[in-house]
Length: 75
Image (cartoon, rainbow, N blue to C red):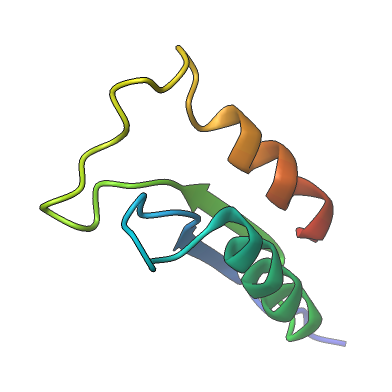
């Protein structure tokens, strides 16, 4: 049986913009991608909305909470 190539998908988990993509949205998206055959999901955050840079009050590792939230939803 031939194996298919691995399917890797990159998503932006949050854009930090009012009304934009949230970490909760990313979990939903990651679950849907996994259900449809994604083998790995590369999650990044922010810097997709030019008018909304990362929060200045962000902790030293601002992406850690988002990664922790999306990891269980990933394959």
